Image (cartoon, rainbow over all chains, first blue to last red):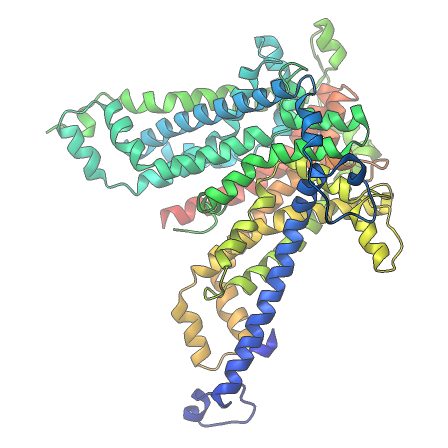
Length: 302
Length: 297
């Protein structure tokens, strides 16, 4: 955007002249407006590109069956819940939905609680090796699900945890634990030590200091941790595929079966896809700030 | 006066124990047993009949490096990772520079909207793009034909399948780079860029001599985070092409999955896992060292 150069000076000038804008003020103003307009244009195009696939998914799920495939597409139509009806009355949908919900809530509760305990231990007591532990968690954060696939599959088989919801919950608790410790610890570090010290002098037991004083103060950090754990457990696919059976499978696994089972029923498929995406919509619109702070954590200081 | 030291020294460990147990049992032990298994021959069949793994030394790795199938998946992975990270960094940075001006109205709303693709399940992303890429009733071919172009066999043409997957990944993850870079840009002190303008710096001079150097480390972290995630990418590809047509989109992680659950060779799949883990460890160690350094400052 070289055009934005506001004060160009080709000829050698005295320094005093160079500091003054050479164009008339009005012209500079219109140029600014034009540039701002161009920025808006780019941003709006960007937003359209980002939103279009999501828009297409939702509208296709609401189209009557005959229109779902129609090319050229019908941009206007009378929305119907037909596809959702098909999905909801499918024998196992409700079961899969509750599997997903149980697993996601269980994993969130477990992972956030364990992470809060560990963060408190790390922040409040200067433990030898605490730094090493933190570095370790940072590296553990990078372990992809697919690397755990074979060993956890074998381990869960020998422990009897294969095809159980609790088995899946445990894996998800572990997978997001490092991130949660990192986030909650960062929030706890900002809390003045005097607060705990005065409680300690008053004879508060350690667990009470933790649950009554610390936890309420780091609630924003815990909500970031909770959202990201829920997102992981609700969206995860590969481990869900390998570690569950037809009774315990979660929604993402169920929808992938839909493609092969029913061929190309885009109405029901986009309906389930939309249902899976509902938590993502809710988080985005009600907790955008937490999301952004979680996504950029570690990259940007402060 | 009671102080931390007079309290039981067991207390801190009570707080840390649950995390230690979970990490040791569900992350460290499986990773180590996976590494161990990569030196054994072990199939799903052995597992089903309860046979013990047979030690074969480095045979699994030797097999892998001799296999054109594996070498193909390395090539596909590097092409995929290189393309998506480069594209996402460039587009993400450009978008962030466009939207950096805090006086722009509606900036918050756009920033919020850009979070959506990141939050949506990879399965859903894969399905939606598969729908849009459909050769006959996909919306993209409809747009192409409206513009007078020939339809493209997006996912069924071996030459187009990988680019199609790259497009979907760029769609999903560019917003992530954008958010990080935008946060970085907004933390650049205002007086610095204003001083540049007063001194008669052009926009580009300001960009290359002041802003970019200031957010250099943010850009680096964004790139490493994207590299790590791109090497792990699996589900979107699983849903869109399952590695096909042929093996033209079979990335390393998908190769691992298929070796374990289609070819049912658990030992060899573990060897693939070790190689993937090695790549990710190098990347994440770089990041960990950098982060800990900036923590200390």
